[in-house]
Amino acid sequence: MNIIYSPKYEIQVDHHPWHTSKYRLTLESLGFQGILPNLRTIEAPEVTDADILRAHSAEYLQKLNDLDFTEDEQHQAEIPLTHKVVELFRLMTGGTVLAGEEALAGGIGVHIGGGFHHAYRGHASGFCLLNDIAIGLCVLLDRSAIQSAVVVDCDLHQGDGTACIFHGDPRVFTLSLHQQDAFPFFKQASDLDAGLPAGIGDGVYLAELDKALAALFAGGRRFDLLHYQAGVDTFSHDLLGRLRLSEKGLRERDRRVIAAARSRGIPLVITLGGGYTADPRDVARLHANTVGEAFAAYQQQGPKEK
Image (cartoon, rainbow, N blue to C red):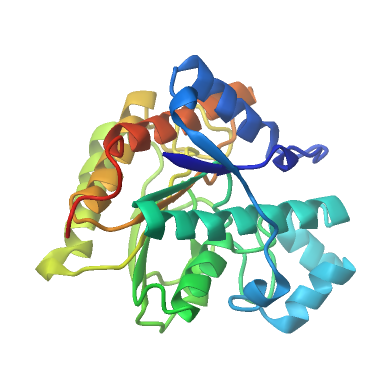
């Protein structure tokens, strides 16, 4: 199984809960688990301006290139606007585009990064400057490599930017399973939203996930690609969330989403999304578990036959 990664993902973002060391530490955790020798790592390329413009406005791209945010825009972004940060988002977005290509070629594309689902067409939001999920899907749709896609977003926070970008686009179905009273406090309308109360644990969460997946595939609905946003900020010890999933519960969540794609022969893209623990090694272990579940499901070449 191939994974997409770059050592350039690790940069210093001062006084911020997003520890970019978690991507390197995820690889280290995969090594501890004995999985890494079975994986082939592919270097993430930088996304092109042309591909960014498939999901973002030209005015917004110019603001990024010029580092020209107003004070309000900087506040909304919640992350420093520097050349290094913009370069990181360009690189990670290229990684997600490549993960989509890998998924179509071999059944699965796993990105050790990505999942910046709060970025809108015309502005940044919630630590996200570029919506790599939307860009990756738009690239494949515009090339006619796929005709339809679904985003299954299980990050703690609603995938509001993705939902807004694809609002009214029949080619992309957006599903978001999230903590209802967490950021973003003004929710967008996904095609299917499951807003969950704070404090729930594995049992209630997994029952809601099963219900959402059943609704998603009701009537034999099919998609050419499934993008799984596998944030682990639903973990019980996450600093920014108040859902209470255990490590075992997170593994089971991953198994169920991966199985939903695998059993239907749908190519699968995985981005790691959020995760904010006091020690980044803890969140890296959870991310590595997601990759491990994907590896266990896809040890044979390619997806199951449709």
